[in-house]
Amino acid sequence: MSENLLRAVGINHVALEVGDIDEALVFYGKLFEIDILSRSETDAFIGLGDQFIALFKGGSDARDTSRHFGLVVDDPDKGRALLEAMGVELMAGKGVNFNDPWGNYVQLVTYGKIQFDKTPGVLRAMGLGDLEKTAAAKAEIADKGFAN
Image (cartoon, rainbow, N blue to C red; front, side, top):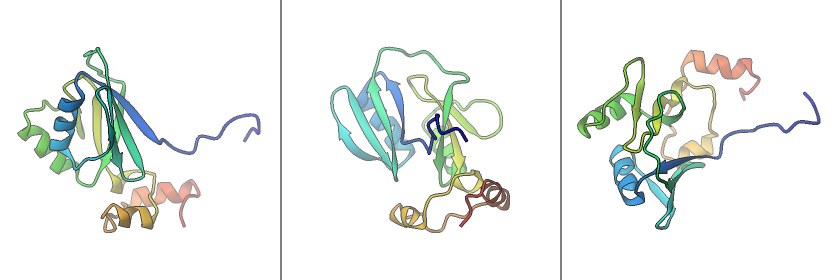
């Protein structure tokens, strides 16, 4: 590891451009419980445990087809059902992938299958102390030297 380079240690937040802050809060509020950290006419910050999503009012409605982010949720299948009930068109392929009304491409992924791990305290505070990792995710975490 080079001492001349920064070490990335994680992602604190993702910023999304939306056409209307109120409409975005309604849309995302129908999909998951939101904790509004702050809000103004031009932005809103939604808490996601120890991270957050920043929504900014912008003018572009261009649909992203490859540029995206994965939002970790407790139950992607429940997310699929909620999105379908909301009339949101899901993208073809494996997983739960969709564009929000402003063209942001979002993937819903399950905590159990991903390589990062939250501390027991963070999970408890989020009311998610019962989430479990798959054997493959545990192995990936261990292979990287991240296991406790």
